[in-house]
Amino acid sequence: MTASNKYLASPSDFLAPFSLSFTKASGDAEFLEFKDVDFVQTFNPNGSAEGLPRYYAIFDINNFLIGPTPDTGYAVELHYYYRPASLTAGSDSGTTWLSENAPTAMLYGALLEAYVYMKGEQDVMALYQQLFAQGLQGLKQFGESKEVTDQYRTGMLIRPKQ
View 1 (tube, rainbow, N blue to C red):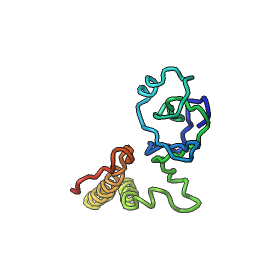
View 2 (view 1 turned 180 degrees about the vertical axis):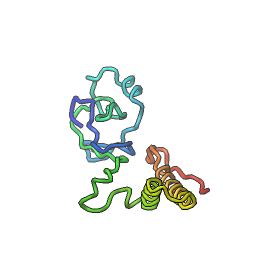
View 3 (view 1 turned 135 degrees about the horizontal axis):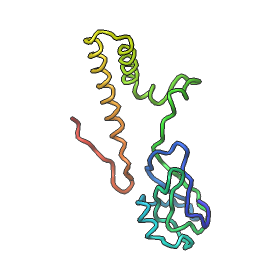
View 4 (view 1 turned 60 degrees about the vertical axis):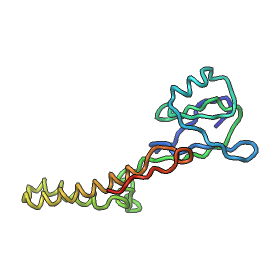
């Protein structure tokens, strides 16, 4: 954060925040509360009023809004969910987020698409469809365990097993 600037740039692969903290002059970390942008603008209607930051919000795709406006420069630490790289981005290393976390969904999705193109037999296509749906269900469960809440204040969300 920079002094007199109520905006903080977000990373290019930013998807959703987990937590945002800054280091005070004393060396202690201070966590900001995630709020709606309307709340932060109402809390600090005069953007030139400066002080110790308390809240942050997603202002637009490239920036967070900080309230109140930082009175001095602060080092920040952002923990966030990120947008995985494209499937083609792993061509150098041979791996991507999807290839490491959803190999079943990728395999049966590709087989299903290929079998549709080849106009294959319906029973095999139904099997590929079923296995692809199971792979997607596993990926969905993996993704839903990643809630966009602040565990520091609300605690870990525990879902019952089904």
